[in-house]
Length: 256
Image (cartoon, rainbow, N blue to C red):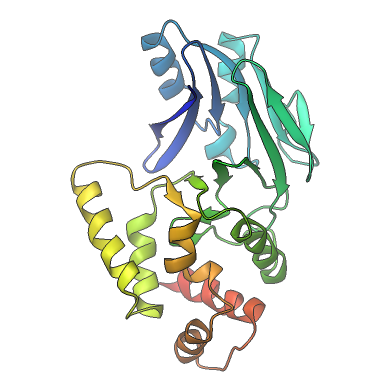
């Protein structure tokens, strides 16, 4: 049976490990040490591949050392990326399969945070790096509001039951901002209490689900009139379309 485990890295990164009884895949290893420590404890586990979502150093910083220690590791990552140390360059619509897990992923190009950003998804799981966070989204470093909003729409179209594995523990900060936009959202208020308890117990707030995010994440609810009205009020001018609502919302979050 395939399972997903979180390894903590830096202050708030998660390196995701997809594992069965004998093999594992490593998603976005920004640091090598947490992975090496984990594999030293799990001596029966052989690492098969590294999956990279985008080129930022807190996602790829551990790749070189890991491939030195485990020379059979294959590295998958986006095509046309500043990060070039990949064995397999992936593009939108491609499918990859791992026989060791009887596991496949579809590749979705989701630029906005960075232009090379991709996601790995199947019927059960979504590994989306820094594009979609629980109750938030990544900063818009390289894309435009139109590009980023379109990427989020791609993810929003996936199944409600999809488990979403984001790369950072930003949920509480995102909730604080979302509550300034969606004050009376009872589902959001309930989730805020749940996340508070999880974090007090040093537990991850992730994975989330797309169903939950569709109910509480303002960045994938920019088509909703009440969100547009609240953003207009905070922004100081009327926004009435999803793209301009997203642009204003992202700018408000950047200042928050």
